[in-house]
Image 1 (cartoon, helix red, strand yellow):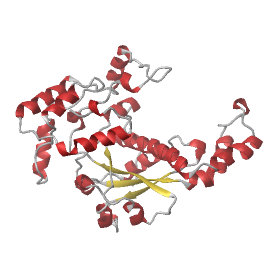
Image 2 (cartoon, helix red, strand yellow; image 1 turned 180 degrees about the horizontal axis):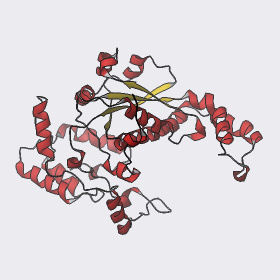
Image 3 (cartoon, helix red, strand yellow; image 1 turned 45 degrees about the vertical axis):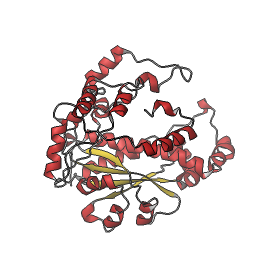
Image 4 (cartoon, one colour; image 1 turned 90 degrees about the horizontal axis):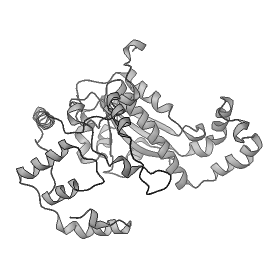
Length: 336
C-alpha cells in the first residue's frame, strides 16, 4: 500500500466539521483503504492529552479478518447490527487508566523537553516532582476515568474529522447489549475501559440529503461571563461560516426519504422511518430551546397530516416523570 500527498484531499477543517454526518448506510462491497484508517488513527494520536500521558488506544477490526466477530456481534445493540455488518472497519476505542498513574512523570518530562513547560508559568522540577506528579497519581480511579474518557473523546472526534477529510463515513455506535462484553471478548486488562465503537466505511447514503441535524440554539448552550447569561451569536459571523461550509442547510433535504426507501429495498429491509405521536411532535416543535429550520418543521406537519401515528405509552409516563425528577428536571417540559 502506498499513497502520495497528492492523493490526500485538502479539505479545510471548518468544511470537514460541517460535512460530518453519522452515516448509517455503508457499502459492504467497498473496503476502506488502509492508508485512510492510518490517517484517522494518526489524527487521534495527536489529540490534546493532559501531561502527554497518551491514554487513548484502539483495536481496529475487519469482519473478514476477525476471529471473534460472532462474539462481538452478540454485544452490539440490536439496531446497530446492520451497521457493523455493512461497514468496512470497526474501531474499538479504549481508555487506559494506568497511563495516568504510570506515565505521569514521563509524559510531563516529554512536554518539558519539547519546550512546553517553562519558568514563565512557574514550573520547576522540584515542585513538579514533590507536588504535581504525586497529586495526579493520587487521584481516585473514578475521577481519573472521567478525565481520561473525555480525552479519548477528543481523539475520537479528530479521527472522525480526518475520516471526513479523506472521504469516508463514520458513526459511533453502542455495544450495550452485553455490558462488559467487549472487554471480555478482547480480554482487556482491568485498567482498560472500552469507550466507543466507531464504524467506518464508504457511505451509500448521500450525507447532503440528510442535511445537518438540528441542534439546540447557540445561546441556549453557551454563556457569557456567568452561567445563565446567554452568549448571542453574531449573524455576520454565522453567514461567513455558512460560506466556509461549517454551517449548512438543515435536513431533511429533498430526496432523503426516497433514498432511505431505495436502500431498504436494496438490502431487503423494511421501508419507512419511525414517528412520534402528534402531541409529542407539536410539543417538540414549540420548544424554544431548539433551533428548528423550515424543512424539519415542514416535515413535522407532513408526518402529522399523514396520520396513523402511534399512541403515547401512557403506562410509561410516571416512570419518565420519576426518572426526570430524580435528577431535578421539570418533567412538565418534556411530558405532553
